[in-house]
Image 1 (tube, rainbow, N blue to C red):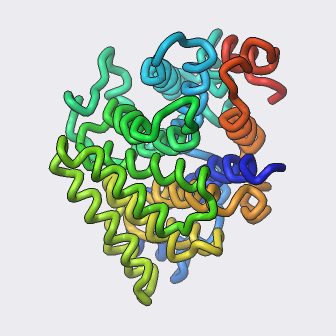
Image 2: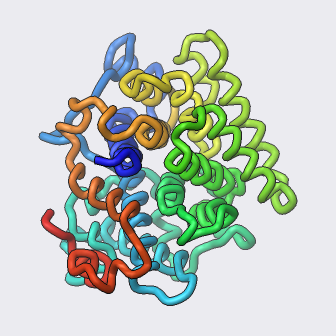
Length: 361
């Protein structure tokens, strides 16, 4: 496996690992986590069935990956956002109806793991049910939760010079999150996350701290003239980078972030990633044991470190119980392998991104 493919797989699988590990304690306080799992908190999967289940955080990233590849396989012109809207609507239907769709745009919609009703943000789901959604200049609401923040991971993975210009990374990520979350701190945090993922995947030799600093700077430069909240997001996330240099108990630092908003969840993930940049397992434990949305923080942390360390660096015991490994690897591979003419000469690609039918799963 090439290093590039290894990191793309690591990104999606790291997201799924953190999401699944954090699900049983999502929205608990640290005190409640310790009451349920002991003084050291949750130290691994709490399996409720034979496999570790993902939630909407991984599902949405998968649907957005699928939709972006649809946009370049089926669409004419720049229709990325239109196809993402179709994909999000399709995910919304999966959260309402148990039956399999007779036809679908996204092949992931045919797979049980991506249809299971584990939505972590009911207000986001209500917004997606509406005929019209929002955009940064006309927000549908003032929600600041992390419900759709992981969509930005797909945007970062999608970037290369054939698909997007660098400023379009931040713009597309902000547009997607603003469809459902109108608080500027939410969609500007999405821009930072997309820039960070793109940078880590394309320049893996750059220090992780420098990646975050560059991503924060890119967002601030792009959006500060338009949104006063860009300063707040930049200051908060820069503080998380600086906090990782301090010699304090990690649980105390994570508690200070109060990870309930998209911005603070990203801050917690940045801190957990930097404080444990060489140890994926410790990063997961740090990212789930705090008050707030543990699935979001751990999922983003997993995506960051998965992209940074690569798929082969993820401990086997996390992947053995994870249900959608094959499908996520296939999506990651497709994000790497796409070329403008691929769909014209590849029957497998046509099946997935024109017919919307999964391949060999």
